Image 1: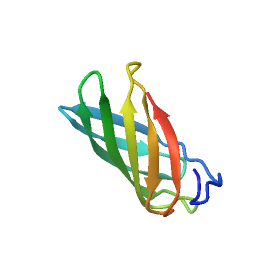
Image 2: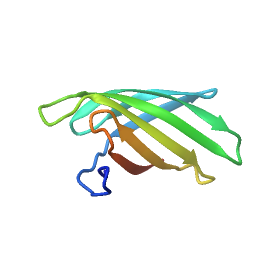
Image 3: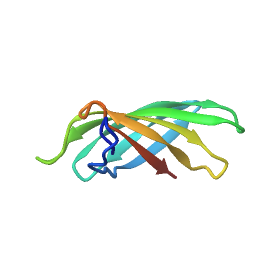
Image 4: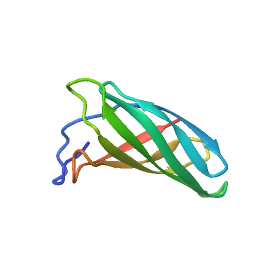
Length: 100
């Protein structure tokens, strides 16, 4: 994760299981310090697909932070999501991710 001035200061590594029905995404994410539901949408066609989804994280121990993490991604031909995320518990902080 990067702060508003670009400094790297933390990383997160939730494991999310997302299911797609039509253009809707739903599932669960579990990280080392938080867990909760994930929901979102997939847009586009086979040539250009994108997904926006959010994880409503609830701290699962004293090191965790509760809040909403929003993910913005494209889905490439190799079926890998790549994109960025922002979180409500750390305003101004962004990060990059990939998921398969």
